[in-house]
Length: 343
Ligand code: ADP
Ligand code: MG
Image 1 (spheres, rainbow, N blue to C red):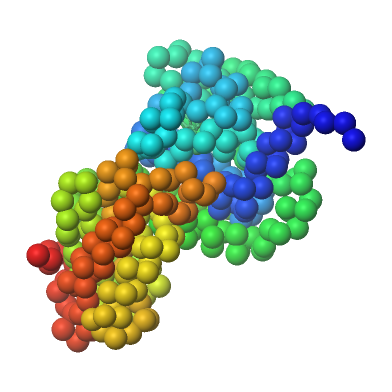
Image 2 (cartoon, rainbow, N blue to C red):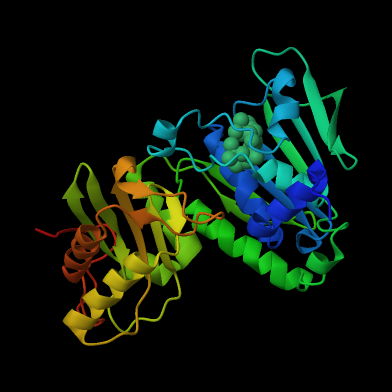
């Protein structure tokens, strides 16, 4: 057997296996790009659960005409230049793989205009080498990415797509998590031309509660106990429901990135066990802010997990902080606006 370099599309399709599992993973990558581009308004249009169309429009920085080709190429990113940057990541993306991967398993077009440019341009990647075609288009400042016919050329992947309804539920759930990561960004989600969610930008902290209620329900917003703990370098804030209340909203964020991290979940679970003697968790929305140098995000291609350099310390910090707000349901009406001093 002779050794050959894979054609670009095939190499990208292999990489896509790691990050593009289903329509919701496409939405995640694209919305994160919009947030990294400084967008304050993001519109997400879905058709048929994302099988047919996923379209993300933003009012972010846009991409220069000369960089459209690069944006669609693998290992091309504007967010990272050196190893030092990799150890100090403040953006959601940095791998430079999402657009190349997604466009290798769909029909993707990228339309964009920067403020400095007079006109807008549209790009798409063609053929086995993914040569990029560019043509003029009409577009306001910002970027629109359209992903049509996801997995049309990878039948093995397409087989794993669930019903439209199931795939849309995954997208809706993802957007809820994102909505609680950035209260300052307005987000609209439509499905088959109907507006399904509209999260308006909230600037004032008090207004954040309205969005929490929208995402997690009114009961969560009324019963959640506010918690704030720590100092610069390692901080935690958020809301925890009283023990015994049933709510499935269990969101955690590290530096505004949503997480499903074992260490964090373990610390929260242990707090409830130690105080209330039970493992069943009520709902919570917890934000951890940590010096980016103290955490490695480059552990998992989809970045669901992180590695804390001082895992034990972070674990115990979370444990102690949460223990302060574990309260039984009946006297748990501290209310969401009441700041519980955890010291
Ligand atoms: P990464 O996010 O890891 O850098 P991507 O493949 O997701 O890699 O995107 C490649 C590059 O394209 C980004 O680094 C960014 O410069 C540009 N880009 C992608 N989406 C947008 C967007 N919505 N607005 C502005 N620039 C974008
Ligand atoms: Mg990205």
